[in-house]
Length: 424
Length: 120
Image (cartoon, rainbow over all chains, first blue to last red; front, side, top):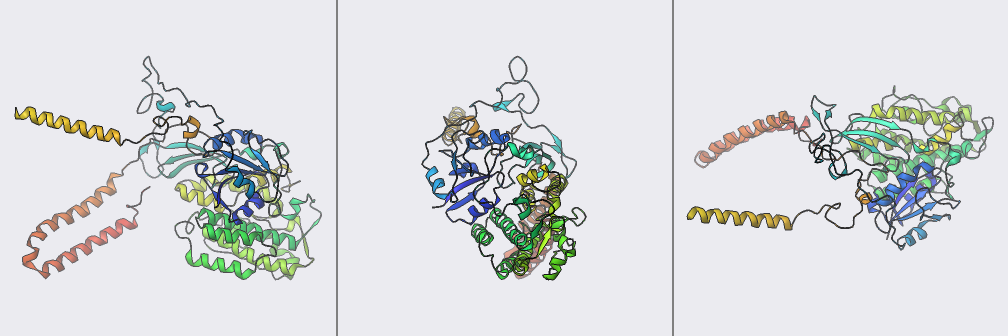
């Protein structure tokens, strides 16, 4: 029986989560109410405490929480969370089902008193006056689509809402399903990464590209074989995550297995998956959603998926030796970005196989979103463009869009710290 | 006397229906099911609480609905007298109605493409 796990991705969690996706004993799910256990992976800022408590209270009994980190500590916000330090978390996740039931951590009170204004508590704005059941009613506001003024629902979609990247906080306003206002709030990861609690889980090989991982400086060469291997695993992990979001769990598991496979999977297998996607198209889910034109982003994978042939590797003589050619797709919608990731992964397998001892430098290396040296800036630009991208979309399409951008909030925060775009 | 019996009967039926409705009522997790704490009943938003209720109104967007109504109501209007004379007239009536329906089907196809039937 698969354990239903709600995953919270802290710093350095990407590799571990890809391995969870590849594991058939675990089912990664999106809702706390459906979860057997909440698994927090990696290092966690203290600012997550209130959000963790809120999600913990919504878990199904026995509200088991585990923290997968190499250094056991107390999880911010949840005192009863036990640590998992080993490489295989599944036995301990299964054992978590037998935990003693835990009570709610937040105070059991209504948000505000049920009372309106005036001597009898019946006055105030809104349809019923005052604050029924502890909250005020929605007031009218303008609709984007036409001149009607009805009730937009304002929400703060928090740092731990599962299909969205952990740490992304959006203030949204919805008219029905349609987003009429989107603002990106500061992520809880934005503070100093040195103050985050805990460390990465035992698996971190897919997380950051080689130079960022080992703390090398800009003057040292990067092995092309390592860089391209990282690229294969990173992109296959993204595709696995998107497939799980699409509901194709078995296909997501196969793709995640390809991502963690050692040696790397054959390019033909990756191309077969790409071909299947081209035929099936996941129409309605990915096809035609979130078309990002070539002028919105001019760097990296997103621009290449929109048809612009921009890549750091074009001018690199080491890559020219290996027979590198730029891959692009037209259109720039979510399906094109997914196929772009698969095509680049297939090509990267071949480059890694041929590379032998060739090397490149940080300022000429191509990362997952754009030039490796600009990793933090690319992420920030994506976040700044999110509001204009998502405005007017339906909620389902918005989630697909955000997932297709492959944001990693914790990695962006760590990269931003050193200012040069490179992790320390 | 008959009025009184009728009135009593109506009253009893109404009470019975109300009683049945009360028996099958939907129980709100926050208020009717004992022991559900407030933090559990909060909607899943990933860490923040919603500032308002979600009891918001949706506009029925009457204009496209009126156009669709006109199209199919008029079709109904024709079909009623057609049904009466259909048996005597025979195949000719069938063919005429098929033509009429296909023309209206074009209108339906147009409305479909314009997204009138999607819920948003």
